[in-house]
Length: 407
Image 1: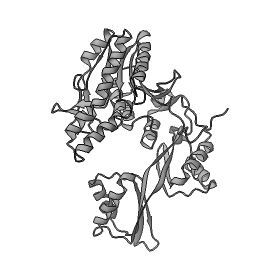
Image 2: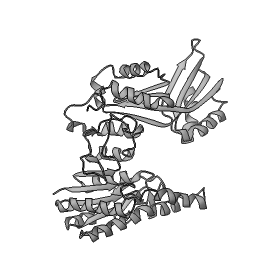
Image 3: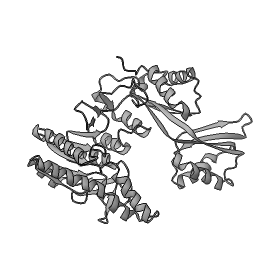
Image 4: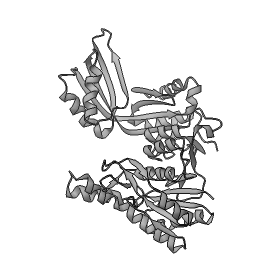
């Protein structure tokens, strides 16, 4: 007998019929003799509608009341799934975030989980009862309902699995696993049987939408075995595991991309000590996250060009912030470009192989794709290119690293 946490996303519980299908899937695990806890998202589209309700009343809303409203979508799903399970003869009970409780800090709208009290749920699971828990929600120290931020249900599921010391956490979604790249763009993309936590964390943070980044961080920290599976098929999914569980690592496991990038270049910045701090300090104070950074020193050594990237939604604010501080950071010109995409090759095999970056650069050069910015880490190489080349670049790199599926 195993203890399994199952998480079902918005598309998996999109309507009553799908919720009833989820109940049948949960029942199969129960019939196999396993203890099961289920974490659910709101039905697809519901959270967006709830957010719209809030902003239509007050765009500058009180985040405490925002959390009360938007957390209700998961609550509805949890109750409906518990009812569907009962209809199938399965003993089931829903548990709200405050009932467990899922204790969080008080950062409303983006709370972080501090602790989950599973003592009562463990007793119920031992008696054969299925626990249905709404994802995304918890309770702060002030006893107010909190939410974890968009995509937080994945984090709820992994944190619950860690607290329960579950044997596995299955994340059910509308895809049947983790692929080497986006199969909608590269038809020869392959589904991976296993991927390491580190690789999955890089892929999630660099644009892959399969798992939420914080959920992978929690899984890696607590050693929770994850499996990404489809709600609409019985095929085996992709296991996200510790590096030790993979006997032979592929050179490259996957290629991720993010269109949510904007490039800002300052031309003719004075080349002097502390200039970077004067530039990026105000951006940090404005809560603008800077990603890739490149600095080119001129021949005379007196000026430099500085390029950095931010999210597209932050581009206008970043430009305004820089312009407000021209007294501290003078420059000749400022250029902003949102027509860019970040493409990253990822693999723990990079640690023991040379020439990974060179192969990437050559494959892009062969297709006439100019690289604007480069950044690297131990297991990834990222480049910034014009967004118009996204599909061409992905296909070229997928082939260059031998990831294409064979017929």
